[in-house]
Image (cartoon, rainbow, N blue to C red; front, side, top):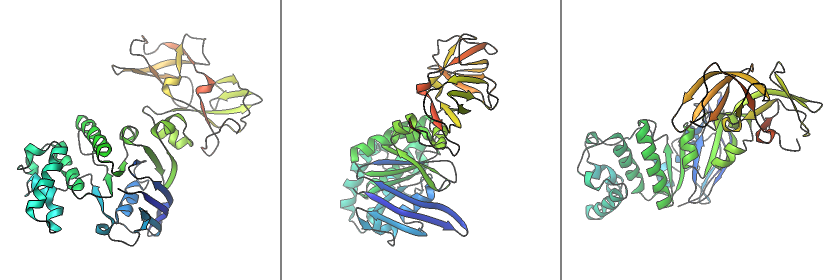
Length: 355
């Protein structure tokens, strides 16, 4: 087990700067998820930590030991890839124990360790099978088992569930979370799937264009995004963003001043107002802050999402109870409490109470 620290990590590919001064401290036993859109640099950063890529500048410390110049085998990290990368001609037992065998460990020592890992992953009855005889979820568990048996200082996961179907992803997500808590191994997990990030992480690192935008717990990122990018990226469906301005105590909504709200707080440089879908209420016509017409209703069983045209730049998304009876084409009012709103300036930074 180990803490991991990144100091000023930069990475250039030719004239393109992919990582722009990444600083990150990961505590022992912590589960960190790197999340962001495609091309933000999260997989490159993971490969640099693993030693599969060299940083252009900066340092990597594992348990206070500078490993920047060390090869992967000297870092004692175990990586699980998007592809299972199993040896097709080897059985489950042989795949899991391969690293110990190549390290020169005797067969009599390898076998009990393989069985112990297999039982942990519920693979004990599959040890004599070949990878082609396993389901996708079982193959991924074999890949994880091959990582566990090495007793690494940390796990590195590079989008390990992206090749699985939806139901298997949920099951494997639960398995990975359970294993990490049971083993207590420091874990860095890369994904573009925010549901994985929100459900797995102790802390989430949001990356965009090679920079860290915000670091925090899932609850912190959802309830208090410090940047407009985080506000829109974290949450499904995403936060509603409304262009606005504050003039003489009046908050004007929309580029065309669709509505005005009395606003006593001292913020003066507001450019965007954000509202989570659950922070908006649907009321009767002429009874809300905004007026609109329902464009689409999506019934999802446990909830329904309603998309309302209020004359703004984008439809407003509202999360409602499944029992609420609304019709497409119906005219409604939109209400919300200003205390539930998030405010951002012209460059996307969050405005706090005294901004």
